[in-house]
Each structure stands twice: as C-alpha cells, then as structure tokens.
Amino acid sequence: MIQQVRIGLLTVSDRASRGEYEDLGGPAMKAWFEKALTNKWEAVPRLVPDEQAQVEAALIELADKEKCCLIVTTGGTGPALRDITPEATKAVCQKILDGFGEQMRAVSLQYVPTAILSRQIAGIRGQSLIINLPGKPSAIDDCLNAVFPAVPYCIDLIEGPYLESDESVIKAFRPKHAKKPETK
Amino acid sequence: MIQQVRIGLLTVSDRASRGEYEDLGGPAMKAWFEKALTNKWEAVPRLVPDEQAQVEAALIELADKEKCCLIVTTGGTGPALRDITPEATKAVCQKILDGFGEQMRAVSLQYVPTAILSRQIAGIRGQSLIINLPGKPSAIDDCLNAVFPAVPYCIDLIEGPYLESDESVIKAFRPKHAKKPETK
Amino acid sequence: MIQQVRIGLLTVSDRASRGEYEDLGGPAMKAWFEKALTNKWEAVPRLVPDEQAQVEAALIELADKEKCCLIVTTGGTGPALRDITPEATKAVCQKILDGFGEQMRAVSLQYVPTAILSRQIAGIRGQSLIINLPGKPSAIDDCLNAVFPAVPYCIDLIEGPYLESDESVIKAFRPKHAKKPETK
Image 1 (tube, rainbow over the protein chains, first blue to last red):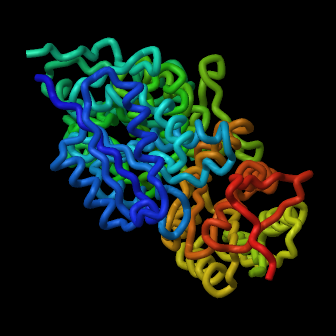
Image 2: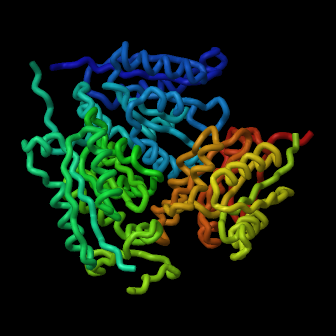
Image 3: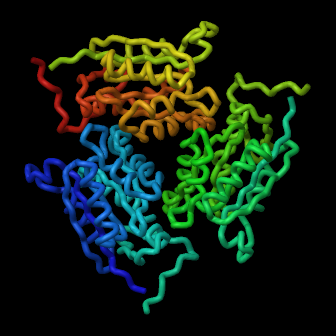
C-alpha cells in the first residue's frame, strides 16, 4: 500500500496571524522537509493565533481530516501567558512521547541556557505524530536535525506512510527487523 | 527487621501471551537480577497481553498481594496503538519518578536515535517501585545497568528490604547517612 | 517601571517545622541569592511541614499576596511517602517547565546516581516562577548554578522585575532582542 505523505505545518502566533509580522517559522519548517525528504510529499500549512481552542482545532483538522502523518508546530512553547501550544498538543494527543522534548531541550542547551524554558512536547493522535518546534528558524533546524532520525520509524509504528530521507542531509534510523513495505 | 525480597517480573505482550512468541524479556530480567543481587530473592513472574486493565491488575497484584518491593515490566512502551504499559503504570502509581525514564532514554540514545520513542516511566505504588523496561533483552540490560545503582536506596526510602548487589557486577549507591538496618 | 524584587524561600520539612532539626536549606538558598544578585532584593522566608495543603497554601501566599517573582523550595522531592513538594507545586502552577527538573537531575547525576530519585519540578503561577530545589545545601548550590542562567529571562517573559546578577558569580543569559526596560 502506498500512502500519500502529507505534512501539517502549523504556525502559532498572535502577531503573524494578525499580519503584523511575517511568518518565518512555517516556511523554515517547509524548507527543512524539502531538503530532507526524498518522498513526494505535500505541505498543509496553517496559521492560527495563540488561542488554545484554535490550536487544538487546527491540529485535529490536520490529523483527522487532512490525514497528515506528521504535524509540526512552531511558536507558543515558552513560559509566557499566551504560550499554549504544548497544552493544546497534549489535549488532542492520546500518547505523549517525552523523549522528543527532552532531546530537543538537550540539543538547544548546547547553544543557550534558556533552552530549559522551552515546553516543547510531541505526541500521537491516531495516525499522526505531532511535534512542537521552537519559533526561531535556526532553532527549528537544530531541533529537526536532532529528532528526525526517529520520525520515520515512529510513523511506521503508527501505520503511516514509509518516509525516506536524503541521507546526505539526514539519516533515518530503523531497526533491522523493520522492512520497507512492498509496493502493490 | 529482615524482609523478604520478592521481585515482580511482568511481561506485557499480545503475542507472547497467546503463545505465538517466546517470552524473552521476562527471562532476561530474571537473569539480570540473578547476576546482580546477593540477597536471597524470589522471582514472581507474570505474563499479560497489551490490555491496560490486565496490566494494571497484574501490577496491583504484584505490589499489594505478592508484596514485591520491585516490579519490572518488559514491553508495551512504544508509540503504537497497543502500547499501553506506561499508561497502566501511571494509573496504579502514587508518584512518578521522571528521572528513570529520562536516564533510560539518555542511555539508549547512545545506541539508537529511536530511543526517544520509548515512553518508559517508573513510579511508586505503596511500598513497591515499578520500572518499565524495553522489550528487547539487550536493551533491558542497558537500562538496568543505568538505573539500578539508585534502586536499593529508593527501596530503603519507601521502607522496603535492604537490597545488596555484587559490586563486581553493579554497585548500588547510598548516601553516607543511609545505614543498613540491624538484623533482629 | 521598577518593580520590587522579592524572593520566596520555602523550607518544607516535618522535622524543621517541629524544631527538631535546624533549617539548613532556607539559609543556603538565601546565601546563594545574596552572592548572585546585584538587585536590591528582599527574602520572604517560610517553613512548613510536609503536608500538601500547607505547602500549597504557602506557595499561593508567596506568589499572590507577597508578590514574589521567584519562589524556591527546599525539601520533600524524593520518593518517600511524606515527600509531596512536587505535587503541591504542580497543583498551584498553570504551567510546568520540564526542562528545569531534567537539567537539575542531569547535573546532580554527575555527583550521585540517586539523582534520578529526585522529582524536582518548576512551574509558573501567574507572575511567579516556582522552582523545587533539593534538601541538601551543597545540592541546592549545584542546582541553582545549573538553572539560574535561564531564570532572569524567564521572569522577563512573565512580566516580572529585571533581575541582574554578579557575572563573576553567575551569568544570566538573555537573547539579544531582550532589552532592559528603561527606568521611569
């Protein structure tokens, strides 16, 4: 079975959603996957303000209706009052994968001690993996470089499409017993 | 007071519980403690499918009725739909000890980038410490080697028996003020 | 706008609250901030037993009534039955910042393998950052040295006063775009 690869790119920002500020996070996430993936894939971009109900609704739509196997968010993961992306993510996921947040913070700590302020999480909703990324484009790249090697196998385990990467950019890891499904 | 040392060994696996697959995780956990502990101890093995109610019931029985001071589980900690061991563990524990999961993932990350997919946790139910371990025997050893040095003192703190290890295999750590209780 | 810098110092200890034991944690936290901060600041000390309702009430009073921008606790973060400081902290916070606990455990692991037994957390209640520290004075210093570099910027983000440190003791980190507010 070949399945379409659709990736949700959700920017969470009051200012960008009001047009006061250019959305830099969304395009940065898209550019990273354009370099990394060798699959044919389709970006499903969304932009919402830092309102928990709207972030939840966008995540649910990207997962359930748009059938994105992977949804990445940018923005809204800090300690400020309006930062609610992790709360919205947790609310729509069945499982939280603590290892993603731990590793993204560990990697970011190599650059800035304020990495511990990030509340980024990742989780599973149905057949979608949702990952919170930072707001800053360079930090988005650092975090995707850190966690992506585990993403294709995670999507295999939730019965999504078989993701393949350009190994000169980033190498996906699968255990030896994990096999590529045959094309029908 | 001398207390019996009983250790619960819980294998969580649909296939092993149907007999389609040999349980390798349970024996691997038992073999590790046979090498590591110098106490006289008794293994209390259990095998259940990946059903949350059955995992919870087994954990409660091992803790409350079988009086195991330590319960280790194998299997069911990944992101797949049927993986529910951490949910069952959390549901029966009064306290969660995040440091165990963090350290097991950090150690496993030295071997495979997919370590971040593991949702292993540990927690306390009454006078029992419950630790989720991976399914793969070699990964069980890596995780026990990583966290066991803290286990005997943890069991002291929850008023369980005084565990002692073969220091040529693994060294338990206790702060200087922690003393071995006198034998009556 | 200049705002007062008030720091809550909460000792959680059954024995110290009964006077059976000198409170060493409270003075150790105070001494650390006396060395580190160059702001004029005021300590707001409290001492309560390991009772969740009393810890919660003290945290709420320090945050909401005493207007402490930072509240540090000492004691009650282990796995023992009476250790309930993290539960009380979680109950009064709107947001939990997992990176603090992760980093404090990672740093403590360099000294003792039992660091994984610590359940220390940090979180935000309104305009107060609450951080659980260990009970032992030397471990208090290790943890504050590890996390303080991120604390002033965190307090900026929750609209608290602008903290400044003696850089020969410890250096606070703020991103380049973060500016010191002008004095009125």
